[in-house]
Length: 341
Image 1 (cartoon, rainbow, N blue to C red):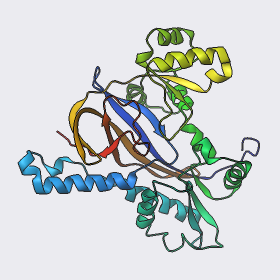
Image 2 (cartoon, rainbow, N blue to C red):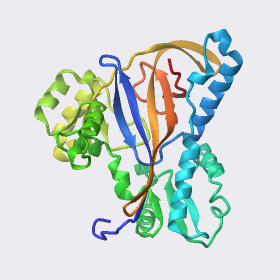
Image 3 (cartoon, rainbow, N blue to C red):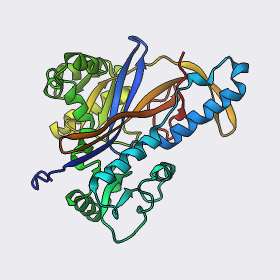
């Protein structure tokens, strides 16, 4: 795509930025920014509605107020962004195409977004029409490209005039390496003029390092429990924690610079835990649990005109404090809601 130097006039991004509350500093630190297949905008809204409804009925007995659970409009705002992108394509007979994995388990997000796309639902399933928007619900894992055919299909989509959500360049912006590069001194200044905005963003950055920093690598070998080793992967279950950080790092050093370049190091966040009742397979357990907040966002631009740049709702995930990973689909966490105090 770099060789083609293809210009994309219309850009659409459906993001989710994930945060954890650090117990030591009481500061929200960014865990990652998702730019492809941001999950659960539909189910997160349903969970919020469920919790509000339960508190409307039983809140007085629990001493809780349903109005303290903030509303969640993630799925309708995502659908709105897709509809606006379709409109910018300016072909009323065109369709929106979702690219999904075979035997998709998380199918309900596709159904929920489809049901909210009132402006485009009459043309989404029609055949023989131009594709206005390609919404990637897959394409982020090596497993999505088992043969050369899948790579050719991705290239064909990238070359097309359709609006990609995301395009390959937009996709790569969400990698851990870009997150680490943005945290370097004087990098944010290239993109933002306001010193206040730059300061606010930097406060959300945890410690992030490349593996060519020998001092930090030595610190990791001595205290691996304070760091997380992250590859350029999405979908949950890929990060490395604890003693495995040291072992993997030493192995990567033996393998050479190419292996080291595939990872970044991140400061490990230790959030405050709370006693929580969790039910699994019909059995209730009380365990200390921690939560991770995801903030959905939508960005749509046509050339220099910004059409949408909005916060769109939230995702709250809760897991037992002993679990390293936080993915719901991967089986590590459950969907939850915010309760404001």
